[in-house]
Amino acid sequence: MRKLTANLSLIIALSFVAGCKNSALTYPLGAPKIDSGFGSYIGVNGGARMAAHQGIDIIGVDGQEILAVADGIVLEATVERCWGPTIAVDHGNSIDNSKIIALYGHVDEMLVGEGDLVKRGQIIARLGNNQDKFECIWGVRHLHFQIGQKYRDRSNKGTYWGHSYFLEDGNKGIDPHLYWADGPNVVTCYESNRQYKNGTITYPVPCG
Ligand SMILES: [Zn+2]
Image (cartoon, rainbow, N blue to C red):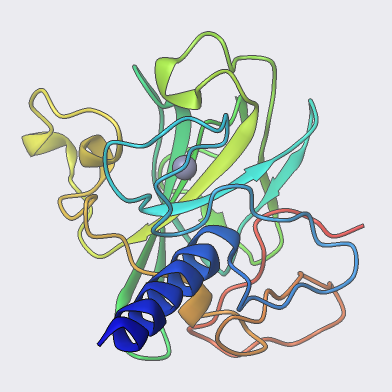
């Protein structure tokens, strides 16, 4: 019995480590790493989260280019009071027929606006120096990328804030690692000379 308990503890400990470090992920050379992964309870500043992370966080330099992960249409480009400048894009359907409503949160300069058509790999925003101006950026300049299913349009935003301002299912984010163009859990950098399958995504930042 003691051995079983010990084994269970080990399994739980290993799962915890895997969840926190995204150790199952493969990154191409030069791809900036995800600092707080999908489902993580630890934020980019090392602090504890109140709830599981609904997206992925990638730390970047001032002026960091943010790329569209697929072709799509911009639903909204708004300065949300906690998240700061955020772009919501409808990227159509995924390979498993889920919607890909993507949030590109905590950016600074927004280079697209509502109704704009975007192409995969297009620079749609840049990170800036606003990490101390908006509470939800937690003092660390980074992109928060999240996928939802149901966009909350202007008619029913009410007093919602954060991911709930943009998505009706903001607390049920979809794991973006399902949809990388090179396969599940294989982070795929955008390359301008490649063709990508519809319903897949490429990394929202350039790889060096
Ligand atoms: Zn985040």
